[in-house]
Length: 447
Image (cartoon, rainbow, N blue to C red; front, side, top):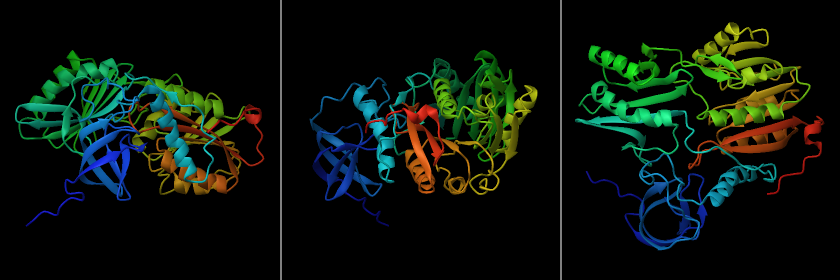
């Protein structure tokens, strides 16, 4: 059977890059369709080969760089290009910062906002990533451990990653040796979550490979030799099994020690967590008495908020909310914190349930919180603080709130996914007629 030819069919064209897309690829135009070219910038002139389709447009590979603009810089990482983790290391810092902020501005403008609500970008430095999910693959005696290639399942074997903390970077060589035992020569694959904690590294391996007696013994030796607080193992979609526990991999939220479940979601850097927490607290009304913390996770914002008000934390992951509840009881903060396990996507908190509350903080997944925002739009909540990791779904949800009478006071972009198109946002909404002296004299941010 003949394979269907890919769109473009290897056609060679000359192209000028017009914009830098949201994923970090340069974007040109051919026959009215966008053409995406990695590692390029607006103003570059190229000879490219069309290699496929993407997002209603075409993908292309560079054959010849004919003219290059001055905003290019030398990438700091030897893996840049093939590795899909970073897409914009070739961009000069000043241009990069404008582009990152403009991602939020453009997302909002597409939904009818002015873009003037967007504050200056807060940038987190490289070398601070304390949580990462690595891909691993065994082929014969060779182990590849790192990140996936761009738009591919192929694993790029990472030797020196510039975004990781030193602890995560140093664990990769010994982890590679351990995987020779864990995965064996039968082309097994694994996803490995590694998190830095106060007591050492917290490791979760998810794989189809068998957990043998030899594997268990090797994990124990590895944990002792490499300051591993906890090492857990899981089949895909299975429950993690702790194999080696030397200490509790504690995380601190508002100074409160919390023991997250294996492989738990956390903000990727401590610096990013601190920045987001400060922004949330800064947007909190001074006279606040009650806060509903929706999509609370293990309590990233719950515990800092509890120093200001009574907090009702709601989270759909039963292990995460159990960790939050347990930490609250151990540290005698349960008189300020109540909890509930609830899927807020399928079962959002209703406007009636929110009646009489002061403030809502929500930190949903990338898909956003559309159904929850419809309920918030009908509520009498005075202040809504929205933490987002997706400008597009945030802008959609912001429109729901504003069309119901809320005012979008400010949006602060936080770049803790440096050299990528990913971005965090903290935004403050206030009900129409709500007065807050913190914003009375604040000038509108320029576009």
